[in-house]
Length: 139
Picture 1 (cartoon, rainbow, N blue to C red):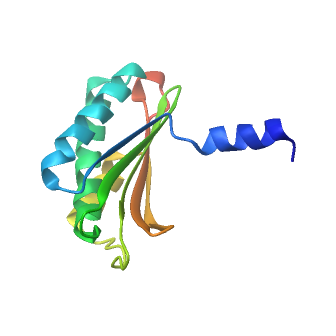
Picture 2: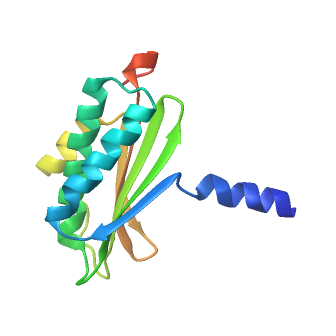
Picture 3: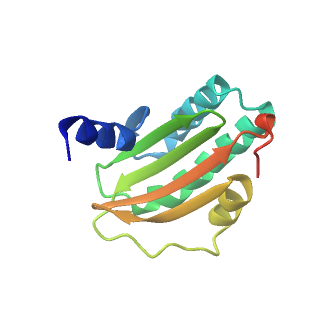
């Protein structure tokens, strides 16, 4: 692999925006507002933006109970024309198995184009993708 290819691979994995907050429910609104602002930059419709805000809130409801003491709530955003991918994660030494029957998961999968939940590198994370319906490529 050449240096330029390695740089391109690293850039592809790097989020366009990353925000770290204390893993506390009081900070979920900051993550929701950030999501709304980024979706607006991508020309998402008002309905899509509200769906994203709700979905991010539900993702936080899933990850926050799994957070280790003193952990950060990390939001990562990947912006593409007509598409926003959001990953919400917390450090978690012993996360519980994902509850695919939970209300939060049901709401999240209804609102997002696609969603995934799991663990990676000591983190419990929920990732969702939303396509803008303004461009005709919605759910």
